[in-house]
Structures are given as structure tokens and as C-alpha cells.
Amino acid sequence: MIEIAPSILSADFARLGEDIAAIERGGAGVVHCDVMDGHFVPNITIGLPVVKSLRRTTSLPLDTHLMISEPGRYAEQFVEAGADMVSVHVEIDPHLNRTLVAIRQKGAKAGIAINPATPLVALEESLAFADYVLLMTVNPGFGGQKFIPTMLDKVRRLRRMIEERGLQTRIEVDGGIDRTNIADITAAGAEIIVAGTAVFGGGDPAQGVRDLLASAAQWV
Ligand code: DX5
Ligand code: ZN
Image (tube, rainbow, N blue to C red; front, side):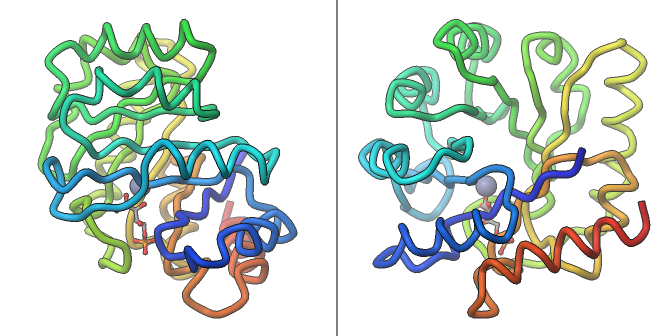
């Protein structure tokens, strides 16, 4: 099943409640929250208080993408704040499996996020502890970047890796996804599609979600 996960990074933070209501109307499956600390990535965004407030405004699952140093120190707090999904970058957590287990024990889905430059082999010892992999299709830090075309094959290889192991791990993709490339990306094996600019950039977020769903369905 294909789900659109609008990234609120491209929303209007002064009207977040209205923007979330709009993506709900459009049929979004998940709300993607980009948490950045200015250390792991060169940008600072939102944190625990915003996730807590969002929890009160929507019944959609909250998907928190942690682009922070020391994610193991904060992951459980994001679940307590109301996150349903928490992803941690493989590049920054020396005790990744412990963090994934802790997220699951708190009752949320645990995800491994992986940068474009990190080979899939880095997932090998951790896949079994994860409910999903968040495969970055741009270098994290900013919305509005261009999809890196070689990531399409990386999605295919990850799909194969998951199937070979007999796992149910879902693939989420993040960065530069729009109406022109979503069908290829879902055909490659991605199921949860993060989109910031494509949803919020056109002025009508509900329509942005509908357009993406329609484009994804066209070829699958
Ligand atoms: C990038 C973030 C993405 C980003 C997506 O670091 O993780 O979620 O905001 O935005 P677009 O769809 O504009 O690339
Ligand atoms: Zn993200």
C-alpha cells in the first residue's frame, strides 16, 4: 500500500494546524516531522514541543525523522511526545540496535534512516530490529533539493535485501519526490513517500497529496 507522508518542513509553521487539516483532507497517510539539531545536519528545525502539539491536532500517525546527534538519548522521548514512528540515522548511532529495540518497547515503529552515501551493507546487522528503512534520496538538511537518480537502484537493491531475508520491513523514501518520479520510485519498491515541496509548494496541500497519489497509481 502506498502512503504519502507530507513533510511539514515545507509547511507554514504559523498555520501548521490548518496545513495538517489540509493534508488529511487530501488523503495523507502519515505526517513526516523533520527534527534537525544543527550538528548532524546543517539546519535547525523542530523538536519535542512541536511533536506534542501536533499529537493533539491530528489522528494521523506522526513519523519523526531524527537528524540529530545522540539519537539514542532522545528517541524514547519522541515516542512519549506522541510519535508513532521514529527513525534514527545509521551513521550517527553506535548502539543502533539498542535504540531500535527501545523505540519498539515504547510502542512505536522503529526505523533506520540511511544517507545517500552510506552503503546498504551498513543495515545488515540491524534490519531485523526495524519496522522500516527511511532511504534518503537527497542529502539531508533541507527541503526542495533534487532527487538523486542513482537512489532508484538503491531502493530496488534494498527491496531485494529485505525479500532475501524474508522480512516485512517497509521502505520509506525522502527527498526530491514529485509527480514526475513517484511512479518509478514506488515501482522500485518504496511504500511510504515523503514529500515536502510537492505537497506544500503549490499553495493547496490537499491537492498536492491527491496529485501525488494519482501519479503513483498511474503506473503501478
Ligand atoms: C530533508 C528532509 C526531507 C525534506 C523533504 O532533510 O528529511 O523530509 O524536507 O522535502 P522535499 O520533498 O522538498 O525534498
Ligand atoms: Zn525527512
